[in-house]
Image 1: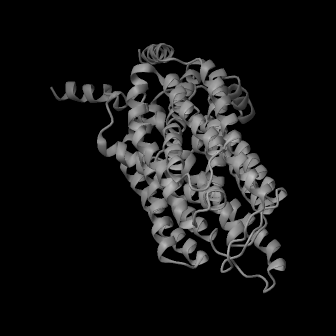
Image 2: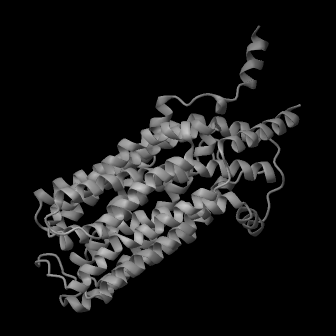
Image 3: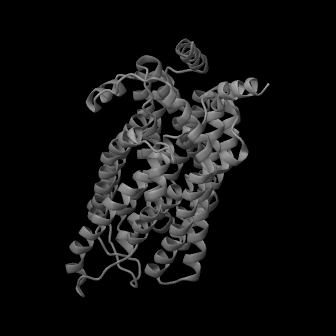
Length: 483
């Protein structure tokens, strides 16, 4: 009787069991810190550089570009190293999150300090530039250290096609929820604290604490499930590991993976260009106050949060492609409409913010739920699981694109005559050329990006039926090895 029970337990595959609510919540919490810090950085870092630190827009865009490029470069390296990490106590991914959480938080906070290297503002610009470049590089490195292993855990927690969509719904509930929380905090702090520099410091400090706590919740909450996966994985005899360069060739010969890269790149290029320019649009084009910026952003993010589970359920019935098309179509209409908005059309602005939020939720959900399917196709073709490599290079190319986009936005503002300012001084009135550049960045540019994403999604080859066939063949291979 006991032998039978033991044999039954040994045959039990925890990855075929449904994830419990506790594990899903813990996994979702892992994206809370990266989402909060990334959200605040995307929405406010460029305008912080130009309107608080007094850095010209072109140099501010260059700072962000350098950080993003380095972030992209270290992604595949960290992904490769996490694939090779061995820890009986933590598995492959969790040690990186455990030891990287606190440095990640501290470096995020240091981005919002404005050191005074000289009493002369013009002489202070270049030392500030190099300070923010150095902190940006270190901050992005530790962002990768905690975030990339986290994203690579999805296929290790479940192998069920629809369960992964559910898991990503929890992840992005915390992600968008964290983004909304950070905006609510920004709204409260900006109203309570009139000094712009002090307000940003307080906001950064609060977000740092929340971010670190969220990462540790994830580490301890998913540990049992991850270790169960590791115990099963190390029992399977894997082929000899291929050299890094050879692995890259295989990764980029995976045709569906190239489609996912493109879909993600264009989706998030649209998201982040819009996010970085919205504060300028609200203040300069719509003639509102800085304290009004968080309410507009909350309208976008709150809608995206509410739509996540709607899209998650709908994708089970109509598929990921249809969901992506529906969401992006509404966002394209909103992005085009923003270009024509005039001061006083506040209600229309919020309507378009809601429409954009509906599309933003699909940009969060769909590309990330496609990647695990691509990884299984690679496993079927090569016999190896290389989640870290795939996730690393997906984010690498996405960040190169974003770096270029932010560089263009910053330099376009400077070329158009945008006037920067320092903390304590009133915001200058911008010339018509700068206002037109802001409108181009908030409307037509994201529209083009989203249309490119739709074209790639139409040709994406992995359907639910194809994924089921892949999983059947993988199961047959494992049964042969077990036999």
